[in-house]
Length: 486
Ligand SMILES: [Zn+2]
Image 1 (cartoon, helix red, strand yellow):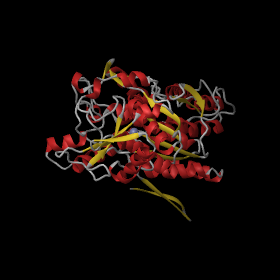
Image 2 (image 1 turned 60 degrees about the horizontal axis):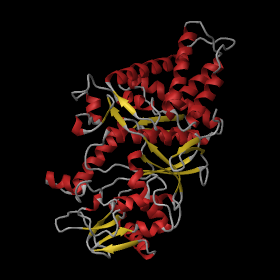
Image 3 (image 1 turned 60 degrees about the vertical axis):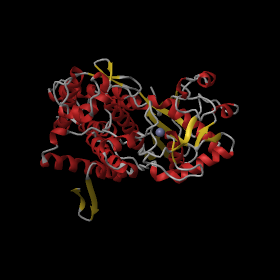
Image 4 (image 1 turned 90 degrees about the vertical axis):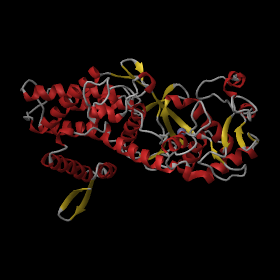
């Protein structure tokens, strides 16, 4: 049983004890979306997984700086050298920044509906052009990048003499360098494995900036090296993203950081797995590319009904973030029922009859829940234990098991911590009922008061911050604590 947090480090391909570089501070960087279209449900799963990780770290009392970027330039389409955002702007005849604005707002709204906490800092690539140009220059100065016809490429062959290009993804550098397949249109490279740090802008290209190498734009990988370093330092604790980003994106990030700052940037690399629908890869071309909005509206030929944001979130958390997750109507309907059962049971805890002794152990349940979460954020196991509690609650209600009043209170707190703080679920049934919201708020404020009385200021601050993120502002006054809905 894990009593301390352990995480699976993709770089070392093993589970390791989580020991932050400067505890209690934790720096976490997650690659954010490229804002040229509605966020993909696969990305929602990635960001929901990191929301769970962020919430659990906060719950453990770590002071987390969570940086998640917005890619608003430089993400080239695979088959052409056109920027995804520029292409959308050209097709819709609007400004690139209109594309960026529209889909940034849409992304925030969508993640808000899934009850994801906002990151501490959300930097944009276009806001960090100067820093990116500086890093390119530094890498050139170190002899690990070269200019070629107005573009700058990372010199993988030169870098590989000192470092292991492929250390994260397990790719073989000799094979990469002999692969001539993707040289088309990029003949400025010395070597097929080299990647762009800076790209020369063709005259028709809309998004371009001045640089020592002429008008151009940064390569996609560069922004994450620059922004993670700027806000989290040259070395930080966690770097996350979908596993499809391992290569080339994250491999290139490591290479850029080692070449530019001469430090191995990340202690723990965390990667989330993919989504499928009815066992098939989710892709627009196969008719399985369902958007979050379509899921929430039930507006897709493959869907038999609409699913609420919390049903979808709960469903996602029922799989471990490193496992593939298969969407199907049956599985989503099961999640909908399960979540209702969990919330109903939780809402009856306070009404349970108290006995002189307990026949079930809340302490043991608590150990099991934390052991699951400490085991690489194993939410499906934690949820399975929560359902054990659901079973008890119903048995206690029927007089077939017993709990003392202290244990009832402890169970109430434990389940609130897990369901709301860690798993980030909301009771949607009470969403439209102001009376229920008020009851819940009074209860949460009481928990916060208890935390304060126990000098658990990390917890009381966390409650205040999370309430704020959910749209509740709380004020401490002489007459007690009050709240307003923002
Ligand atoms: Zn990135």
